[in-house]
Image (cartoon, rainbow, N blue to C red):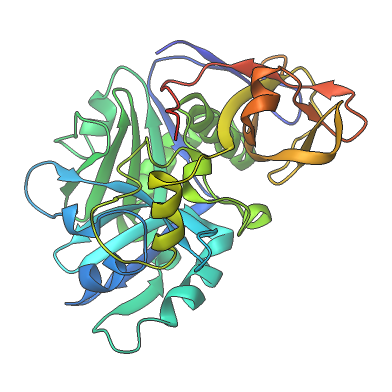
Length: 332
């Protein structure tokens, strides 16, 4: 992995080298769906194929996904993984868990499921680096394929890429792992910033509180990454719009990666413009401070990206510079 330089909010440069580093993902938590109908219930609500999730002694599949309105607009996004034989966990931004529970409970009345906020049960810890021996001391057998997971004594390790893992640790067992992450002098905000920067580099966007109902799943490239959309699974909330866009429509906005030398924090939902139009041509998805500025993922029109005219603010003083994504965006 190439070294990523992170600039903290205090202006301190921090090198994120491909050596061992634990990261406290304190701004994310788990929503838990437990019960004999967990898969069946969730299958009818979200974009990914929940039936592909499994729980075994080997490597188990995980999926990105989204829950949408009937108009196909994303209410929340997540990564799904089974934490035991009867429970599915959805990792998402903590500020969306309450509204996500409310949205799902509307449909759960006739299903044998229990929905709960898993914040008091699990803690999310990230790991990045080439030397996984320290992580293996906690979870001895790690997954080696992106979007797969292994479990050990109630702990879950999810492979994001070849040297990055998201770990779901029961709170009763998290203290030793927290101690490992706290040996680094970074603040909680710096940990969050680091994990966001890594997600941006991998082209993984998500819904934030500021962007609820702003995007359809394909705008975040979910038809490409993380098994996030199944076009074969059948009906779910918003499925008609998502499928129509895939089979009949032409998507005019995609998520791209950008950088800016500005240190003024860019927030999710910030509108973007071109000098040629007073109307917004897109919005910021996520952002993070890096060396000499910030990087972000943003959904913008294809024309604005191709013309290299994406700016923050309607005065168009701050131009965003296009960066590469680790995958190609197909033409819908």
